[in-house]
Amino acid sequence: MPRVKKEEQVEKKPRKKAKPIQTVKGMKDILPPEQFIWDYILHNSRKICQDFGFGRIETPILENTDLFKRGVGQATDIVEKEMFSFETQGGDNVTMRPEGTAGVVRSYIENGMSRWSQPVRLYYEGSMFRYDKPQQGRFREFHQFGAEVFGEEGSAIDAQIIYLAWKIFQKLGLRDVSIQINSIGCPTCRNKYKKLLTDYYDMKINKLCVDCKRRLEKNPMRLLDCKEEKCLQVAAGAPQIIDNLCDDCNTHFKSVLEFLDELEIPYVLNPSLVRGLDYYTRTVFEIWADGDEGESRQAALGGGGRYDGLVELLGGEPTPAVGFSFGVERVADKVMKMGLDLEPKVVKDVFLVQLGDMARKKVMKIFDKLVDNNILVGESLGKGSIKSQLRTANKVRAKLALIVGQKEAIDGTVIIRDMDSGMQETVILENIVEDVRRMLKG
Ligand code: HAM
Image 1 (cartoon, rainbow, N blue to C red):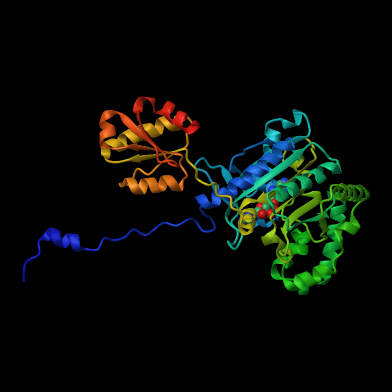
Image 2: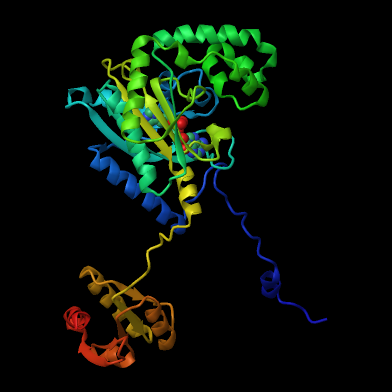
Protein backbone atom coordinates (compact mmCIF):
# COMPACT_ATOMS: atom_id res chain seq x y z
CA MET A 1 0.00 0.00 0.00
CA PRO A 2 1.44 3.42 -0.96
CA ARG A 3 2.28 5.53 2.03
CA VAL A 4 0.26 8.74 2.35
CA LYS A 5 2.26 11.82 3.23
CA LYS A 6 1.45 13.51 6.53
CA GLU A 7 0.24 16.83 4.89
CA GLU A 8 -2.18 14.90 2.62
CA GLN A 9 -3.66 13.17 5.66
CA VAL A 10 -4.21 16.53 7.34
CA GLU A 11 -5.86 17.96 4.20
CA LYS A 12 -8.39 15.14 3.94
CA LYS A 13 -9.74 15.65 7.47
CA PRO A 14 -13.21 17.28 7.17
CA ARG A 15 -13.11 20.77 8.48
CA LYS A 16 -15.20 21.27 11.61
CA LYS A 17 -17.89 23.85 10.87
CA ALA A 18 -18.38 26.48 13.55
CA LYS A 19 -21.83 26.41 15.13
CA PRO A 20 -23.78 29.44 13.86
CA ILE A 21 -24.83 31.98 16.47
CA GLN A 22 -28.47 32.98 16.27
CA THR A 23 -30.43 36.05 17.35
CA VAL A 24 -31.50 36.22 20.98
CA LYS A 25 -34.91 34.60 21.50
CA GLY A 26 -37.76 36.94 20.60
CA MET A 27 -35.55 39.32 18.60
CA LYS A 28 -35.15 39.55 14.84
CA ASP A 29 -33.26 41.18 11.99
CA ILE A 30 -35.02 43.57 9.67
CA LEU A 31 -33.64 42.90 6.21
CA PRO A 32 -33.61 45.20 3.14
CA PRO A 33 -36.95 44.04 1.60
CA GLU A 34 -38.71 44.76 4.91
CA GLN A 35 -36.92 48.10 5.26
CA PHE A 36 -38.93 49.48 2.33
CA ILE A 37 -42.08 48.87 4.38
CA TRP A 38 -40.52 50.34 7.53
CA ASP A 39 -39.38 53.44 5.63
CA TYR A 40 -42.88 53.84 4.22
CA ILE A 41 -44.44 53.60 7.71
CA LEU A 42 -41.94 55.81 9.50
CA HIS A 43 -41.68 58.42 6.75
CA ASN A 44 -45.47 58.89 6.62
CA SER A 45 -45.84 58.89 10.41
CA ARG A 46 -43.07 61.47 10.89
CA LYS A 47 -44.56 63.68 8.17
CA ILE A 48 -48.01 63.66 9.79
CA CYS A 49 -46.57 64.41 13.25
CA GLN A 50 -44.55 67.30 11.83
CA ASP A 51 -47.68 68.64 10.08
CA PHE A 52 -49.45 68.53 13.46
CA GLY A 53 -46.65 70.57 15.07
CA PHE A 54 -44.83 67.76 16.91
CA GLY A 55 -41.06 67.90 17.46
CA ARG A 56 -38.95 64.76 17.50
CA ILE A 57 -37.42 63.53 20.74
CA GLU A 58 -34.96 60.72 21.37
CA THR A 59 -34.47 59.35 24.85
CA PRO A 60 -31.98 56.66 25.92
CA ILE A 61 -32.86 52.98 25.74
CA LEU A 62 -31.49 52.50 29.27
CA GLU A 63 -33.27 54.26 32.10
CA ASN A 64 -33.11 53.88 35.86
CA THR A 65 -35.31 50.95 36.85
CA ASP A 66 -37.25 53.13 39.31
CA LEU A 67 -38.63 55.17 36.40
CA PHE A 68 -40.67 52.21 35.17
CA LYS A 69 -41.46 50.84 38.61
CA ARG A 70 -42.96 54.18 39.57
CA GLY A 71 -44.24 55.21 36.14
CA VAL A 72 -45.66 52.05 34.57
CA GLY A 73 -46.68 50.61 37.97
CA GLN A 74 -45.41 47.87 40.31
CA ALA A 75 -48.46 45.68 39.81
CA THR A 76 -48.40 45.64 36.00
CA ASP A 77 -47.31 42.60 33.98
CA ILE A 78 -44.57 44.73 32.44
CA VAL A 79 -42.90 45.59 35.76
CA GLU A 80 -43.71 42.31 37.50
CA LYS A 81 -42.24 39.99 34.90
CA GLU A 82 -41.31 41.56 31.57
CA MET A 83 -38.42 43.95 32.17
CA PHE A 84 -34.88 43.48 30.96
CA SER A 85 -33.21 44.86 34.10
CA PHE A 86 -29.64 44.57 35.33
CA GLU A 87 -27.11 46.14 37.60
CA THR A 88 -24.28 48.05 35.90
CA GLN A 89 -20.63 47.62 36.85
CA GLY A 90 -21.05 50.81 38.87
CA GLY A 91 -23.95 49.35 40.82
CA ASP A 92 -26.83 51.27 39.17
CA ASN A 93 -30.10 49.41 38.59
CA VAL A 94 -31.10 50.04 35.01
CA THR A 95 -33.77 48.73 32.62
CA MET A 96 -34.01 48.58 28.84
CA ARG A 97 -37.14 50.64 28.25
CA PRO A 98 -40.28 48.51 27.88
CA GLU A 99 -42.22 51.52 26.48
CA GLY A 100 -41.56 55.11 25.48
CA THR A 101 -43.87 57.31 27.56
CA ALA A 102 -42.08 57.13 30.94
CA GLY A 103 -38.75 58.17 29.37
CA VAL A 104 -40.37 61.10 27.53
CA VAL A 105 -41.98 62.26 30.80
CA ARG A 106 -38.64 61.99 32.58
CA SER A 107 -37.09 64.11 29.85
CA TYR A 108 -39.95 66.68 30.02
CA ILE A 109 -39.22 67.15 33.73
CA GLU A 110 -35.42 66.94 33.54
CA ASN A 111 -35.18 69.45 30.69
CA GLY A 112 -37.60 71.95 32.22
CA MET A 113 -40.06 71.67 29.34
CA SER A 114 -42.83 73.00 31.59
CA ARG A 115 -41.20 76.40 30.92
CA TRP A 116 -41.63 75.96 27.17
CA SER A 117 -44.72 77.28 25.48
CA GLN A 118 -47.49 74.76 26.23
CA PRO A 119 -48.71 72.40 24.96
CA VAL A 120 -45.43 70.60 24.25
CA ARG A 121 -45.89 68.10 21.43
CA LEU A 122 -43.28 65.37 20.99
CA TYR A 123 -42.94 62.29 18.82
CA TYR A 124 -40.44 59.43 18.98
CA GLU A 125 -39.52 56.07 17.52
CA GLY A 126 -37.26 53.27 18.63
CA SER A 127 -36.65 49.87 20.17
CA MET A 128 -38.55 48.71 23.25
CA PHE A 129 -37.88 45.53 25.23
CA ARG A 130 -40.29 43.23 27.03
CA TYR A 131 -39.44 39.78 28.32
CA ASP A 132 -42.74 38.36 27.10
CA LYS A 133 -43.49 34.96 25.61
CA PRO A 134 -42.54 35.34 21.94
CA GLN A 135 -45.35 34.54 19.52
CA GLN A 136 -47.00 35.91 16.39
CA GLY A 137 -46.73 39.73 16.58
CA ARG A 138 -45.10 39.66 20.00
CA PHE A 139 -41.35 40.11 20.30
CA ARG A 140 -38.86 40.77 23.07
CA GLU A 141 -37.35 43.60 21.09
CA PHE A 142 -39.94 45.55 19.13
CA HIS A 143 -40.26 49.10 17.86
CA GLN A 144 -42.78 51.78 18.67
CA PHE A 145 -43.66 55.04 16.99
CA GLY A 146 -45.35 57.33 19.47
CA ALA A 147 -46.54 60.85 20.19
CA GLU A 148 -47.19 62.69 23.47
CA VAL A 149 -48.78 66.08 24.27
CA PHE A 150 -48.10 67.84 27.60
CA GLY A 151 -49.86 70.75 29.25
CA GLU A 152 -53.46 70.58 27.95
CA GLU A 153 -56.29 69.10 29.91
CA GLY A 154 -59.14 69.81 27.48
CA SER A 155 -60.92 66.93 25.77
CA ALA A 156 -60.02 68.42 22.36
CA ILE A 157 -56.45 67.16 22.81
CA ASP A 158 -57.60 63.60 23.57
CA ALA A 159 -59.56 63.78 20.33
CA GLN A 160 -56.62 65.28 18.48
CA ILE A 161 -54.28 62.47 19.54
CA ILE A 162 -56.84 59.88 18.42
CA TYR A 163 -57.26 61.82 15.17
CA LEU A 164 -53.47 61.79 14.69
CA ALA A 165 -53.35 58.01 15.21
CA TRP A 166 -56.31 57.54 12.87
CA LYS A 167 -54.76 59.75 10.22
CA ILE A 168 -51.49 57.78 10.30
CA PHE A 169 -53.33 54.49 9.79
CA GLN A 170 -55.44 56.00 6.99
CA LYS A 171 -52.37 57.41 5.30
CA LEU A 172 -50.70 54.00 5.43
CA GLY A 173 -53.75 52.54 3.72
CA LEU A 174 -54.81 50.50 6.78
CA ARG A 175 -58.53 51.09 6.53
CA ASP A 176 -59.78 47.93 8.23
CA VAL A 177 -58.98 49.14 11.72
CA SER A 178 -61.20 50.30 14.55
CA ILE A 179 -60.67 52.66 17.45
CA GLN A 180 -61.69 50.97 20.69
CA ILE A 181 -62.30 53.56 23.38
CA ASN A 182 -63.17 53.76 27.07
CA SER A 183 -62.74 56.05 30.05
CA ILE A 184 -61.18 54.72 33.23
CA GLY A 185 -61.92 57.88 35.22
CA CYS A 186 -59.75 59.81 37.64
CA PRO A 187 -58.24 58.35 40.84
CA THR A 188 -61.34 59.44 42.83
CA CYS A 189 -64.01 57.73 40.77
CA ARG A 190 -61.73 54.85 39.88
CA ASN A 191 -61.01 53.99 43.51
CA LYS A 192 -64.74 53.86 44.24
CA TYR A 193 -65.22 51.70 41.15
CA LYS A 194 -62.36 49.36 42.11
CA LYS A 195 -64.09 48.69 45.44
CA LEU A 196 -67.32 47.89 43.60
CA LEU A 197 -65.44 45.63 41.22
CA THR A 198 -63.51 43.83 43.96
CA ASP A 199 -66.77 43.14 45.83
CA TYR A 200 -68.26 41.72 42.63
CA TYR A 201 -65.26 39.50 41.85
CA ASP A 202 -64.92 38.38 45.48
CA MET A 203 -68.31 36.74 45.11
CA LYS A 204 -67.16 34.92 41.93
CA ILE A 205 -63.64 34.06 43.06
CA ASN A 206 -64.05 30.34 42.41
CA LYS A 207 -64.87 30.96 38.77
CA LEU A 208 -61.61 32.83 38.05
CA CYS A 209 -58.33 31.65 36.53
CA VAL A 210 -55.22 31.48 38.74
CA ASP A 211 -53.78 34.74 37.35
CA CYS A 212 -56.98 36.66 38.00
CA LYS A 213 -57.22 35.34 41.56
CA ARG A 214 -53.74 36.70 42.11
CA ARG A 215 -54.44 40.02 40.37
CA LEU A 216 -57.71 40.66 42.20
CA GLU A 217 -56.14 42.29 45.22
CA LYS A 218 -53.53 44.43 43.48
CA ASN A 219 -55.10 45.32 40.16
CA PRO A 220 -58.78 44.35 39.91
CA MET A 221 -59.36 46.27 36.67
CA ARG A 222 -56.99 43.98 34.77
CA LEU A 223 -59.49 41.15 35.35
CA LEU A 224 -61.80 42.82 32.87
CA ASP A 225 -59.58 42.07 29.89
CA CYS A 226 -58.49 38.53 30.81
CA LYS A 227 -58.92 36.29 27.77
CA GLU A 228 -59.67 33.05 29.66
CA GLU A 229 -63.14 31.82 28.68
CA LYS A 230 -64.36 31.45 32.27
CA CYS A 231 -63.09 34.92 33.21
CA LEU A 232 -64.75 36.43 30.13
CA GLN A 233 -68.08 35.06 31.36
CA VAL A 234 -67.60 36.60 34.80
CA ALA A 235 -66.43 39.91 33.28
CA ALA A 236 -69.62 40.11 31.18
CA GLY A 237 -71.69 40.68 34.34
CA ALA A 238 -69.21 43.01 36.09
CA PRO A 239 -70.13 46.62 36.91
CA GLN A 240 -68.80 49.01 34.25
CA ILE A 241 -66.59 52.00 34.96
CA ILE A 242 -68.50 54.08 32.44
CA ASP A 243 -71.59 53.90 34.74
CA ASN A 244 -69.48 54.95 37.71
CA LEU A 245 -67.56 57.99 36.45
CA CYS A 246 -67.69 61.20 38.47
CA ASP A 247 -69.41 64.18 36.80
CA ASP A 248 -66.18 65.77 35.56
CA CYS A 249 -64.87 62.53 34.02
CA ASN A 250 -68.26 61.84 32.49
CA THR A 251 -68.41 65.29 30.87
CA HIS A 252 -64.83 64.94 29.64
CA PHE A 253 -65.49 61.57 28.03
CA LYS A 254 -68.73 62.68 26.39
CA SER A 255 -66.94 65.67 24.97
CA VAL A 256 -64.12 63.48 23.53
CA LEU A 257 -66.76 61.36 21.76
CA GLU A 258 -68.47 64.47 20.39
CA PHE A 259 -65.18 65.64 18.89
CA LEU A 260 -64.67 62.22 17.31
CA ASP A 261 -68.20 62.34 15.87
CA GLU A 262 -67.46 65.77 14.45
CA LEU A 263 -64.22 64.50 12.89
CA GLU A 264 -66.14 61.46 11.55
CA ILE A 265 -63.77 59.03 13.20
CA PRO A 266 -65.60 55.75 13.81
CA TYR A 267 -65.07 54.24 17.26
CA VAL A 268 -66.30 51.33 19.34
CA LEU A 269 -67.17 51.92 23.00
CA ASN A 270 -65.37 49.13 24.80
CA PRO A 271 -66.13 48.99 28.56
CA SER A 272 -63.55 46.26 29.20
CA LEU A 273 -60.65 48.24 27.72
CA VAL A 274 -58.43 49.09 30.69
CA ARG A 275 -54.87 48.98 29.21
CA GLY A 276 -51.89 47.30 30.81
CA LEU A 277 -50.09 50.33 32.24
CA ASP A 278 -51.02 52.04 35.51
CA TYR A 279 -50.51 55.66 34.53
CA TYR A 280 -53.73 56.22 32.59
CA THR A 281 -56.55 58.52 33.68
CA ARG A 282 -59.82 59.15 31.83
CA THR A 283 -59.62 58.41 28.09
CA VAL A 284 -57.96 55.16 26.99
CA PHE A 285 -58.00 53.76 23.48
CA GLU A 286 -56.54 51.08 21.25
CA ILE A 287 -56.38 50.57 17.52
CA TRP A 288 -57.40 47.07 16.50
CA ALA A 289 -57.25 45.41 13.13
CA ASP A 290 -60.75 44.26 12.17
CA GLY A 291 -61.27 40.60 12.94
CA ASP A 292 -58.83 40.66 15.86
CA GLU A 293 -61.40 41.68 18.47
CA GLY A 294 -61.06 38.43 20.38
CA GLU A 295 -57.39 38.88 21.12
CA SER A 296 -56.89 42.52 21.94
CA ARG A 297 -53.67 42.13 23.92
CA GLN A 298 -51.88 40.30 21.15
CA ALA A 299 -53.47 42.09 18.27
CA ALA A 300 -53.63 45.79 19.18
CA LEU A 301 -51.74 47.73 16.55
CA GLY A 302 -51.47 50.70 18.85
CA GLY A 303 -52.78 52.18 22.06
CA GLY A 304 -52.73 55.21 24.28
CA GLY A 305 -54.67 57.58 26.44
CA ARG A 306 -54.55 60.38 28.95
CA TYR A 307 -52.14 60.25 31.87
CA ASP A 308 -52.71 63.40 33.92
CA GLY A 309 -50.92 62.14 37.06
CA LEU A 310 -47.69 60.81 35.61
CA VAL A 311 -45.58 63.98 35.41
CA GLU A 312 -46.29 64.71 39.08
CA LEU A 313 -45.75 61.06 40.06
CA LEU A 314 -42.28 61.23 38.49
CA GLY A 315 -41.35 64.42 40.34
CA GLY A 316 -42.60 67.23 38.06
CA GLU A 317 -45.30 69.86 38.48
CA PRO A 318 -48.87 68.59 38.01
CA THR A 319 -49.17 68.50 34.20
CA PRO A 320 -51.97 66.96 32.15
CA ALA A 321 -50.79 64.77 29.25
CA VAL A 322 -52.06 62.43 26.57
CA GLY A 323 -50.39 60.23 23.99
CA PHE A 324 -50.31 57.06 21.97
CA SER A 325 -47.91 54.69 20.28
CA PHE A 326 -48.11 51.91 17.73
CA GLY A 327 -46.02 48.79 17.25
CA VAL A 328 -44.03 49.08 14.02
CA GLU A 329 -43.68 45.27 13.56
CA ARG A 330 -47.43 44.74 13.83
CA VAL A 331 -48.20 47.62 11.47
CA ALA A 332 -45.50 46.43 9.03
CA ASP A 333 -47.10 42.99 9.01
CA LYS A 334 -50.47 44.50 8.02
CA VAL A 335 -48.88 46.74 5.38
CA MET A 336 -47.01 43.77 3.92
CA LYS A 337 -50.26 41.80 3.63
CA MET A 338 -51.75 44.65 1.57
CA GLY A 339 -49.19 43.76 -1.10
CA LEU A 340 -48.15 47.33 -1.97
CA ASP A 341 -45.21 47.52 -4.33
CA LEU A 342 -42.95 49.71 -2.23
CA GLU A 343 -39.57 48.60 -3.50
CA PRO A 344 -38.10 51.50 -5.48
CA LYS A 345 -37.25 50.55 -9.04
CA VAL A 346 -33.52 50.71 -9.69
CA VAL A 347 -32.93 53.19 -12.49
CA LYS A 348 -29.46 54.49 -13.32
CA ASP A 349 -28.30 57.30 -15.61
CA VAL A 350 -25.03 55.60 -16.37
CA PHE A 351 -23.63 52.08 -16.20
CA LEU A 352 -19.90 51.41 -16.00
CA VAL A 353 -18.51 48.55 -18.07
CA GLN A 354 -14.89 47.41 -17.75
CA LEU A 355 -12.55 44.80 -19.12
CA GLY A 356 -9.39 43.86 -17.24
CA ASP A 357 -7.73 44.88 -13.98
CA MET A 358 -6.36 48.19 -15.15
CA ALA A 359 -9.74 49.25 -16.54
CA ARG A 360 -11.43 48.23 -13.29
CA LYS A 361 -9.22 50.65 -11.35
CA LYS A 362 -10.06 53.50 -13.77
CA VAL A 363 -13.75 52.68 -13.52
CA MET A 364 -13.67 52.94 -9.73
CA LYS A 365 -12.34 56.47 -10.08
CA ILE A 366 -15.02 57.35 -12.63
CA PHE A 367 -17.66 55.95 -10.27
CA ASP A 368 -16.45 58.26 -7.51
CA LYS A 369 -16.44 61.35 -9.79
CA LEU A 370 -19.95 60.70 -11.10
CA VAL A 371 -21.46 59.97 -7.66
CA ASP A 372 -19.91 63.20 -6.34
CA ASN A 373 -21.73 64.99 -9.16
CA ASN A 374 -25.11 63.43 -8.30
CA ILE A 375 -25.21 61.22 -11.38
CA LEU A 376 -26.90 57.85 -10.73
CA VAL A 377 -24.27 55.21 -11.47
CA GLY A 378 -24.44 51.44 -11.65
CA GLU A 379 -21.60 48.93 -12.02
CA SER A 380 -20.86 45.24 -11.79
CA LEU A 381 -17.16 45.22 -11.04
CA GLY A 382 -17.22 41.52 -10.26
CA LYS A 383 -18.39 40.54 -13.75
CA GLY A 384 -15.92 39.81 -16.55
CA SER A 385 -17.69 39.77 -19.90
CA ILE A 386 -18.79 42.98 -21.61
CA LYS A 387 -21.95 41.24 -22.81
CA SER A 388 -23.16 40.38 -19.33
CA GLN A 389 -22.33 43.87 -18.06
CA LEU A 390 -24.32 45.46 -20.89
CA ARG A 391 -27.23 43.15 -20.04
CA THR A 392 -27.19 44.50 -16.47
CA ALA A 393 -27.00 48.05 -17.87
CA ASN A 394 -30.23 47.33 -19.78
CA LYS A 395 -31.87 45.90 -16.67
CA VAL A 396 -31.32 49.09 -14.69
CA ARG A 397 -32.47 51.08 -17.73
CA ALA A 398 -29.21 53.06 -17.93
CA LYS A 399 -29.24 55.72 -20.63
CA LEU A 400 -25.48 55.53 -21.16
CA ALA A 401 -22.87 52.81 -20.81
CA LEU A 402 -19.31 53.95 -20.13
CA ILE A 403 -16.92 51.33 -21.46
CA VAL A 404 -13.26 51.10 -20.43
CA GLY A 405 -11.09 48.32 -21.90
CA GLN A 406 -7.33 47.77 -21.82
CA LYS A 407 -6.70 50.30 -24.64
CA GLU A 408 -8.86 53.04 -23.11
CA ALA A 409 -7.25 52.49 -19.71
CA ILE A 410 -3.81 53.09 -21.23
CA ASP A 411 -4.98 56.06 -23.39
CA GLY A 412 -6.95 57.74 -20.59
CA THR A 413 -10.17 57.61 -22.62
CA VAL A 414 -13.69 56.24 -22.19
CA ILE A 415 -16.21 54.98 -24.75
CA ILE A 416 -19.67 56.40 -24.13
CA ARG A 417 -22.44 54.32 -25.66
CA ASP A 418 -26.00 55.56 -25.98
CA MET A 419 -27.99 52.52 -24.89
CA ASP A 420 -31.03 53.37 -27.05
CA SER A 421 -29.37 54.20 -30.38
CA GLY A 422 -26.18 52.15 -29.92
CA MET A 423 -24.13 55.21 -31.03
CA GLN A 424 -20.67 55.37 -29.48
CA GLU A 425 -18.26 58.22 -28.87
CA THR A 426 -14.75 58.16 -27.38
CA VAL A 427 -14.04 60.94 -24.87
CA ILE A 428 -11.18 61.93 -22.57
CA LEU A 429 -11.43 60.54 -19.03
CA GLU A 430 -10.47 63.91 -17.49
CA ASN A 431 -13.67 65.53 -18.85
CA ILE A 432 -15.97 62.60 -18.15
CA VAL A 433 -18.46 64.47 -15.96
CA GLU A 434 -19.06 67.21 -18.56
CA ASP A 435 -19.37 64.71 -21.42
CA VAL A 436 -21.79 62.50 -19.50
CA ARG A 437 -23.91 65.54 -18.59
CA ARG A 438 -23.94 66.68 -22.25
CA MET A 439 -24.98 63.26 -23.52
CA LEU A 440 -27.62 62.78 -20.80
CA LYS A 441 -29.15 66.10 -21.88
CA GLY A 442 -28.93 65.25 -25.58
P1 HAM B 1 -48.75 49.51 24.77
O1 HAM B 1 -50.19 49.21 24.46
O2 HAM B 1 -48.13 48.73 25.84
O3 HAM B 1 -48.70 51.07 25.11
O4 HAM B 1 -47.87 49.37 23.47
C1 HAM B 1 -48.20 50.06 22.28
C2 HAM B 1 -48.07 49.14 21.09
O5 HAM B 1 -46.78 48.54 21.06
C3 HAM B 1 -49.02 47.94 21.12
O6 HAM B 1 -50.30 48.31 20.66
C4 HAM B 1 -48.32 46.99 20.15
O7 HAM B 1 -48.61 47.31 18.81
C5 HAM B 1 -46.86 47.28 20.42
N1 HAM B 1 -46.32 46.22 21.29
C6 HAM B 1 -46.41 46.13 22.62
N2 HAM B 1 -45.77 45.04 23.08
C7 HAM B 1 -45.27 44.41 21.99
C8 HAM B 1 -44.49 43.23 21.78
N3 HAM B 1 -44.06 42.47 22.79
N4 HAM B 1 -44.14 42.89 20.51
C9 HAM B 1 -44.53 43.66 19.46
N5 HAM B 1 -45.26 44.79 19.60
C10 HAM B 1 -45.62 45.16 20.84
C11 HAM B 1 -47.57 51.72 25.42
O8 HAM B 1 -46.46 51.26 25.35
C12 HAM B 1 -47.82 53.17 25.81
N6 HAM B 1 -46.52 53.80 26.10
C13 HAM B 1 -48.56 53.92 24.75
C14 HAM B 1 -48.80 55.35 25.13
C15 HAM B 1 -48.13 56.43 24.66
N7 HAM B 1 -49.70 55.78 25.98
C16 HAM B 1 -49.62 57.08 26.09
N8 HAM B 1 -48.67 57.48 25.32
